[in-house]
Length: 394
Image (spheres, rainbow, N blue to C red):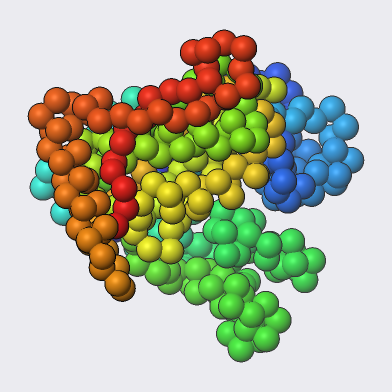
């Protein structure tokens, strides 16, 4: 049995500063700079006016001219949701989270830890979250999500397969990224419920809607892909507060400092980085967050700076602070071999080993180098900073 934990309008609640703010009137998350001009999560008052997540901004404002647009806060949402996931994992759940506010896990195996029944698991989850949440269960991820949308904060609900999904509206497909665009087209064709969608011939759905339609047809019949729980991860991040609002070359130097500090953390234990998250607090208010997946596991600061510097071009405004976090760690870095080895690679390897031994004995500040940050600043202390020295690359 799959259990789904749903915190409705989670991103909007965090960006607005609390659930009490949603009672002030219709509001929605504004589009992120540089992204599609569609609204994000909407309040209950906006939903009553026919506005839904993913609707074009112009159409949403036409339906509700007094719609309040809340600037998104991706950094605050990510931090708050990470705390929620940590509480669920403390219960013993292997959690899959497709989006902030939605978490699914397999209840099999947790019953013995929490009273031997699904009710015991639900009670343990509620006690761990310490916040109102809707909890549903079903044989698949989509069934559990449908149950959670209908559940109340004090009682869980179960949807058992296609029979339980038959009366649900096709708008539920908007909660799945691959099928988010289908409900509008289905409603225009007169298909209002998942039961009507499941009754359609599979080949006709495939011919009209392609792979997304096939997935929606499977979901309507209670079939879904297996859960893919997130792997256990360690919190490894570095933050730099910028004395002055930074942009351009100054911001790239600050990024280099963060990369050096992150690679020098003793918790890394020589492992490479597979993915990293770069985020910033903007001067004009709000936050910015970008995820970068490296083509191969990296531990070379130069290559990491080159890969992450391209993300800085997406920054919509000058930043007050910059944060770099390791999202996924890989195996230890393998030593490189030069095609024509003239002794330089061996000397570089010995120097890196000496730096590592000095840092293990005296701490991360045992070997430092000077990094120019703002050479033109009138304040001498802002012209350069000391950053961890890893040694030359072979």
